[in-house]
Length: 281
Ligand SMILES: C[S@@+](CC[C@H](N)C(=O)[O-])C[C@H]1O[C@@H](n2cnc3c(N)ncnc32)[C@H](O)[C@@H]1O
Image 1 (cartoon, helix red, strand yellow):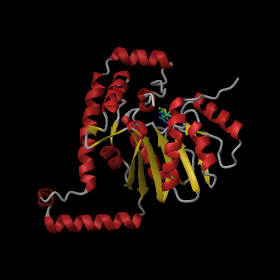
Image 2 (cartoon, rainbow, N blue to C red):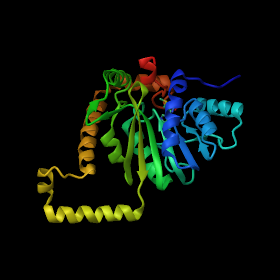
Image 3 (spheres, rainbow, N blue to C red):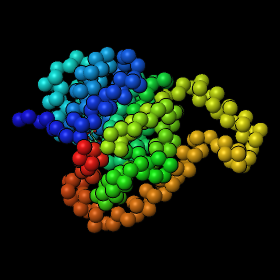
Image 4 (cartoon, helix red, strand yellow):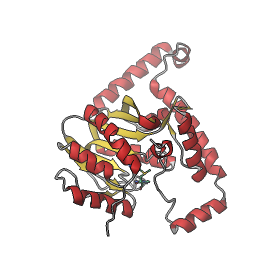
């Protein structure tokens, strides 16, 4: 039986995403994909980035089977056998990588998945390596399009722990990374590229920050609007966390029991509703 899953949205977004990957990735390296889903992305990107060794992964067995089925069809030497990774289960059983890619995971999962994804990126991405995220994001607390706001509402109704994330909060959670670039993509999605800083850079930034605060003082810095980006992000993260806490409280016992019944006690079912899909383009 063919276990290959095929999603329209992957067919629509794989070329635009590939163009960004070709721009931002160095000529060769090792890449870990988290939440590979069907495997359409993994096979397509591995095929078009032959110098990159692509390691797909997912938490769901049916997705791992689909990745294997796509891989069997393509027979690409640089596409590795997918591994089972639940971002919440550290440590992940993989070595160091030059890049980590994840598409449409952090908004269709509890916030803790985003935090653990960032922690995993911190453990596995080498200094100078990239963390590349694809999906919808809120910028400065605002949705970038009405369709994203509608999508956000829809996924939160489905599970109060889901939701389109604030880019600032995500960057703040990505400890040891700096935001390098952000690309507007079709269907109001974005590709966000973060770079892992080396220990020396982090140390120099820490010293520079301490010196600036010592000379100007924190309150004067704020008056001059010279706050560090990470401080801005912290505010975003706090706001985002507060929203999340409130939403978690709205999950009543009946919903939890229903969830448990549907999934045999394993947690929420993780399918792939997607803004690409909702927009129908
Ligand atoms: C919305 S789908 C996106 C799939 C694919 N990346 C795409 O863009 O079509 C989210 C994926 O994340 C995976 N996922 C959800 N929670 C996860 C977790 N805790 N650890 C690892 N993967 C997870 C799901 O199994 C699913 O494949």
